[in-house]
Each structure stands twice: as C-alpha cells, then as structure tokens.
Image 1 (cartoon, rainbow, N blue to C red):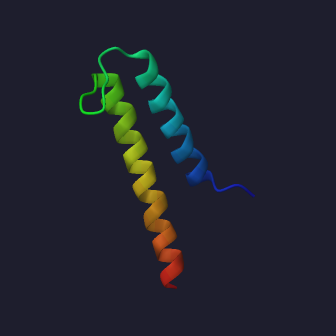
Image 2: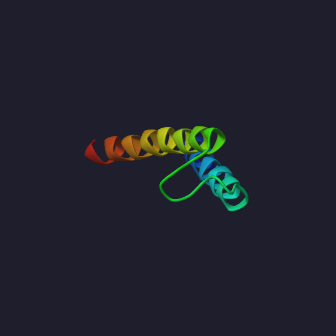
Length: 59
C-alpha cells in the first residue's frame, strides 16, 4: 500500500515545480505569494515525512 504522506509530499513538489516553470516572478531565491504557499506546503510535508522515516529507523 503506498504511503499517503509520501504521496502528498511528492504531489506538493510537483505542484511547486509546475508553478515555478510557468511563473515569471518565481526564481531560485524569490517567490510570488502562490509560489511561497506551494513551497511552504512542500517543506512542511517533506519535513513530516523525513521525521517519520527517522523515527522508524531509531526504533
């Protein structure tokens, strides 16, 4: 069964990537408000996924 958190984290990465390829305001160091929202969602989900992976390894 696929990991839901992993799938959401990957979907957030794809959404951010799709946005940045079409947004003239987003660069590697600057983001528009939508780009910032998408990046923050990606970061939050990635951090949650990686924290859970670390917890699994230490048990």
